[in-house]
Image (cartoon, rainbow, N blue to C red):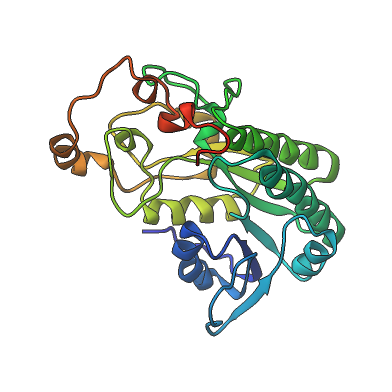
Length: 272
């Protein structure tokens, strides 16, 4: 269950609202605001009561200025969410994110929840436990773009006082699909709780936190983000027996098994 919060936003912006996690958060975030503004480059379907729909490209500066007018806080899921060629990643995840933050600065928006990724540190080994303070080891151009996003958030905190929580999302799905996800799984309820904590914690500066549930297998230590008050309620352990029965024992010398990034560590930029 997501935490009760006394804070009710007038208008929240959810970018990437036509994507998978956008679809998960769209009905959940509406409970915490008077108006939920939804944006994507793709059609968003009909608007529900209390929703505003805006089709926009992230790298369109004028569109971003219009999109952020009257917004209290941003949950930014928009952009390329898999490995891809450089130009689309550059346009959406780098130039687009810069234009989003510039629009936030222009309009005085002071809180952003940024969907970063565990692929910022995908080349750490699965037998290591790391913290948000460990040096990035991105496994793809996609992971590299998310590392840039975290640094951009840091800059806008120091220069312009825009507070950001960068969530290095693990694997947020309805259920655990494979052995890797026993470590990386983030339930939808825990995702909702983490986003709400990121929106409402009193002071976050720029905080980096890994998005995972209370799993028995741990690669990531979130102690440095304890001030968010995030307390995951779900665990992949309840699904371990099913997953291990479905997936055979893995080869420890396989790079997909050796490194935390899984299959991303061997993806070429045109293979995703």
